[in-house]
Image (cartoon, rainbow, N blue to C red; front, side):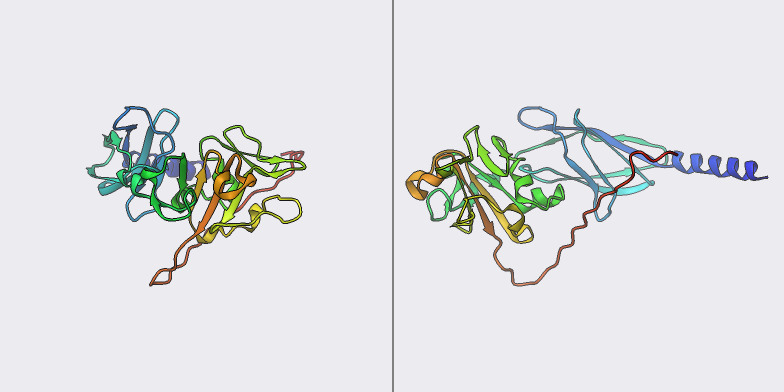
Length: 253
């Protein structure tokens, strides 16, 4: 009797799965035609989503109906595609994403100590927005910085473009700032990454190159300036959940 019930449940599950529609496609850069890896693909106003794989492909399983599909990627304009799918239908939606034009209008203050558009700066600056941290569920600034090209964290020190982040006897070579104020430890000059207010970051400005003329010898290889977010007229709250699983590796089944 139990075998019959199990078989019926298995058959019903197969039938239910077969009624679902499939939305899939490939994501590329509109200008260079290069594939985009890690693009967020979500059904609007739902938790159903996925990301593009190493080949730029994505695939979503949905119930029959009409959906707005949102494609979002750091540095690119969000794209919304509307589709209507039927049961067992396979819908292919290929998307070419364009770079965010407003990035050149980003305001930065680190390189000149007053607000200027990033497109007017003569030095190489990378601006990291809070969305990049939220989408990847990061809770430490050092993890965020390693997503920036040319930046690595070695022994807790930020190294930019291969330049040493710290020199014993001389001190830091990459200056860490919080709202334009140095926050390195006074005695040893080490950064305290865990003390950075990740929940209140407006943007992180990374200068890739010497900035010692404005900041002294501590900025020989660059600057990391964490700028706090401005207060808004309406309060809002955010929740982030982090977890892990620990098990006995020697446990026998």
